[in-house]
Structure formats: structure tokens, C-alpha cells
Amino acid sequence: MIKIAFFDVDGTLLRLGHKELSANTAAALRQLHQNGIILCMATGRSYTGVPHFDGIDFDVLLTFNGSFVTKGNDIIFKNPINEHDKYQIISNLKHMNRAIAISNEHMIVTNGTDPDLEQYFAFGSEKLKIADNFDEISRTDIYQIMCSCQKDEHSQILSGAPHSQITAWWDKAADIIPLNSGKGNAVAAVLKHYGFSKDEAIAFGDGHNDIEMLEAVGIGVAMGNAKDEVKAKADFVCQSVENDGIYHYCVENKLIF
Image 1 (cartoon, rainbow, N blue to C red):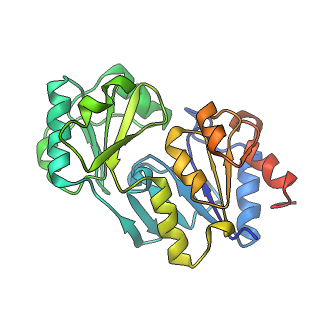
Image 2 (image 1 turned 60 degrees about the vertical axis):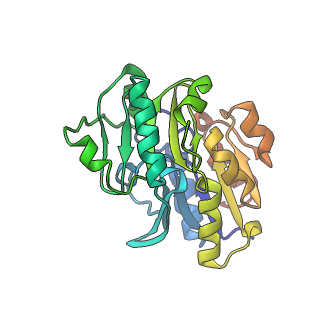
Image 3 (image 1 turned 120 degrees about the vertical axis):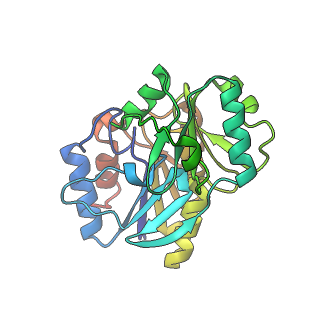
């Protein structure tokens, strides 16, 4: 019996670049909640950048790809980037002449901009905020670093930063998070908090950064618009986000009526 459900946001709950849920997706979430299922948002977005939907309250927020997890005002799990790694990665990116975005639980700022990084933020309907005090903010606990890049540049970005990893859901940018973080570890922390087994959990996702989450629950569902490597790791594949995949899966499997 499913007691808790985890949802990626961009490309899963929301069509890329959109701010509002479809009517069917919103109805599915409301009915799941009414049926007593705990709703968890699991996103690569910052804590301050999570979307809010009218009439729908998520019980748990997994932000920064699982590095900062909250239940209301309570912090269930937090895992900032290793201090040495943080400065090393920022140095690497500066040498690569890349604009850098950093996030703590209060804000997300950059030291510059470029078209791909702007597009990356636009997917989540966010705008870059260039900060004159970027170096000062970088000395706080940072949960995620973001930059535009190609996959073959990942090793250069992480050079000298053994406690960090790259997770990505778009092929022109990357999210840099702690090595022992990720959505899968965050899901495990949430299940432990509630005393649930993985068999009592379901998750929906579409990106590479969702694979660990899909594997950390009893039922991992890839969206129809997910890439092949994500579908290969899922237990089931539903219709695409454009075709209200979450809604139809929940109806077909009698999670809602």
C-alpha cells in the first residue's frame, strides 16, 4: 500500500518552462493527499525557488537535488558541499571562464551570466541575480553550484574536489552537489523519518538526476518524455507530462478514482 509519493518538478509535474500544473495533474495531487498519501516535492531547484500551487500543500520538500530537506519548518536532512571542494570547484569554473551560480537556503546568486545558464534558470521560471558580494556569500553553507557545461567537461569541473558529484537533467548545464547527497539518499532519509519501507513509496521523474530516486522506492515511474536511460531504470513508464502522465498512471493503478 502506497503511503508516500515523491515527484520531480520540471518535466514531471510541470512542462518545461511552465509555472502552473495542468488541471488533471493538480486533481491527481489533491486526490492523493485526500487519500492520506504524503506528498513530497523532489527538485534540483533551490529551497527559495520551489513552486507553489494553489490548493496543494506538499508535506516535504527535497531541494537542491536532496541536499536540503524540510518538513514544514523542520529540517529533516541537510548536507552542504564540502568546504574545500566548494572553493576548488569555484576556482576551476573561474579558470574555465564560466559564470557560476551558488545556492544556500536563503538565496541563489551568480557572479555572471551566459545564455545557457540563463536558459537553465528560465526552465524553472527564474532569473539570474548577479551579486557584487558573490565571494562573501560563497563563504556560507552552499548546497548546490550550477554552471553551463557539456558532459565532457564534468571531470575538469570536479578536478580536486573528491567529495562532490555532478547530477544533470539538461545536457547543457550541471548541478554540483555533495557526493553523498542526491535524491536517492534524501528519499531514504524521508522514509526513515516517517518509518516507512521503500515498498510503501512511489516516485515519478524524467531526468538523469531522478534515477537514484526511482531506485530508492518500491515503484519508480519514469515519465513518457524521460530519456531512455531513465526509463531503463524505472519499474514503469507512464505517459508524458504533456499528456498528464501522473494523472493517468494514478487512475489506471487505482491510486485515485
